[in-house]
Length: 135
Image (cartoon, rainbow, N blue to C red; front, side, top):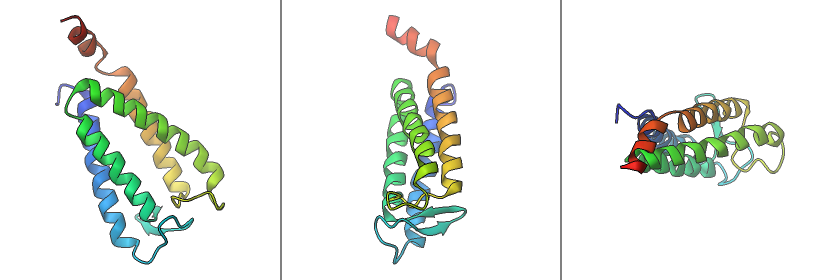
């Protein structure tokens, strides 16, 4: 795994997102499932729906970390989704459409995650994947 940047990133991010999803449930007791304002976990607002999204993202990344091809695909896919969420989040804060209780810190984290996931997903392990395809 250490020889593949995509597998390593997927495993680390997957573990972190699973832990954040679980920790989120500790602070969201009494918060509506899709409330537009959540409770704070570190700097980030979360509600139960946001926690479930974190669990799903974490599980997808962790499962994909088994192979280079899967890790690359999931890193790029989740990176693209986080880029979209980071940009849309700028317009959702303070509106009724903010069903995952995004705040400014969430937007920064989503955009940073998108850059890292897309950068590694699109740039790393390309030679390894090409060699596997020709073997």
